[in-house]
Image (cartoon, rainbow, N blue to C red; front, side, top):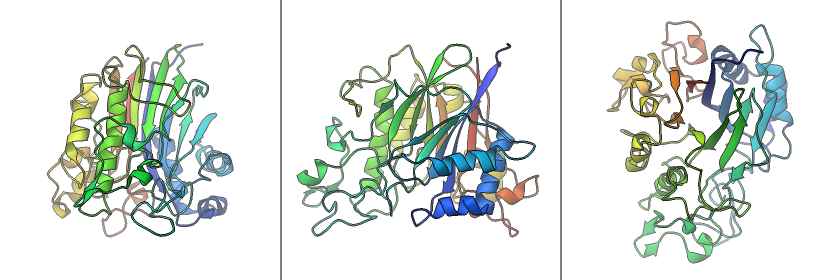
Length: 372
């Protein structure tokens, strides 16, 4: 049996979040347009491994029936159907009610007092789909790691001191959703570690900048994880200590909600990560940085300083990343975003030439091909 010469790794924020629990499952059963277009995008690009952000579920990921439904009735359908025999729905902190009010007194309530922002447990969750075996036994999860336990954590500050009380910090995790190190068994016998996450967006905050602070430190967790000299403090949900071994291959992927040039967050975190020599520079910042021409249709409507070539979001931002380690050999990369006049433009644009989130997503699929 001949081994493939390459694998394609992708991340895609599919925007399949809904305001009510169970709504996504009902829409998937009814065959709505948006998940159909999402499936066609995935069929078009055909990643071997893909992280899908913003896919609602039950929070603890005990019931994956609507993920199975999406894979069976959407992704596997039609002449271009694609099968993902290995799937993992990831437990999440979103919509998990804190035991006390996070922002003051009174009874806690959702969405503001979720350990991760959400109207119900499982909103904005994420999942991994793969053509290759996912090694669940050695997987590490960092869902319960407390924010306060990061040395030098960038905890938000108010005029009178810490924005969060000591009692809140006893319960508040760093990860707004989850951080997982999920190994994948590749066809050539090597193991690839998927470092997947979806940090808090740096929006909807006051002068304390609590979401910007959390986003910064959620990025830092992975940055420290790949640097042995910085990872001593990291503790996974099973009590294991430390970060990734320096001889292991990895890819950091997800909607990181951080642009190195624009947007509302603290840019130094994503800038430091992208510049780290442990990442493949060609993909992070160089000639193989994922790109498309689709964003140029918005250039006259945006005041962003970054190049539209690298945008992955309809608001003119680079938010979505596939960042392989330096030892891996990238072959090609891309952002799937056709221009309004090109084939399949109706998956992205409305008739007036504006991005249409209801057609698919406000994010674009990002992919990188890696040599085996």
